[in-house]
Length: 63
Image (cartoon, rainbow, N blue to C red; front, side, top):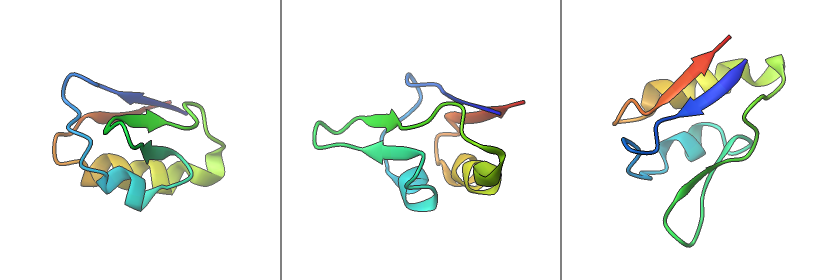
């Protein structure tokens, strides 16, 4: 699994961070950071939830 973020679409709302804090972080600079682009399979559900809750639909999960 690979997490792909379209940073042109991302508005750093932080909803992904709330859904999967192990994978996403909005830092003090106001930008989103992916903490692990290729997380273990055990985090798939959280990654998929983060993608679903993104208001901009900027997160995709590739297999």
